[in-house]
Image 1 (tube, helix red, strand yellow):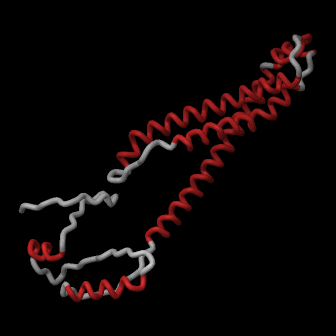
Image 2 (cartoon, one colour):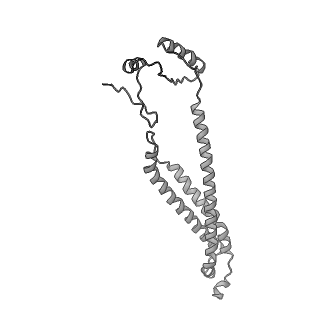
Length: 213
C-alpha cells in the first residue's frame, strides 16, 4: 500500500503513530462500527467553544459522539509531577550533602591527632593560628570540590550515554553546565562546613606538642 509522508510529528511517544485524514482512513481501513476516534483539541482562550465546534465537525463527518468534550489539564499535571520530582531530588540531595559534611568532619577530626606535631611545628616556625586554620579549611574544601568534580564527570558520562537510551524519542538537550557549576560550589561549601571544626581545633594545638615529641 503506497503512502505519502507529509510530515513527522515529534510527539515524544515511544510507539510509532500514523496520522491521516478521516476520509483516507475510511477508504483504506473500511467502515468499522467498533472503531473509535479520540480527538485532542487545544485553543487557548476559547475552551468553552471547543465542545460545540467538535460537535459540528462530528456532524459534518457523520460521526457518533459517545462522550462529550472533557477538559484534560496536561500541562498542570506535568508541572505538578515535575514539582514533586524536584522536591524529592532536593531532599535526597540535602541528605547526601549532610552525609558528606559529616564524613569530611570525621576525616578532619581523625587527622588532627595524626598531624598534631606538624601543626605545632608550623606554629613554632612562625605560622599563626589563623594560618593553620586556613590550611585545614582549604584542604577540606579541596576534598569537597574534588568529590563534586568527580560526581559531575560521572553525571556527564551518564547523561551522554544512558539518558538518550532511556528517553528514546525525546531530545535530552545539552548538558546543564549551570547545574554542574552549582554542584561544584555546593561541594566546596560542604567541605568548608565539614572542615570548620577541625580547622578550629588544629589552630588551638599548643606548640609544646613538638617538645613532647
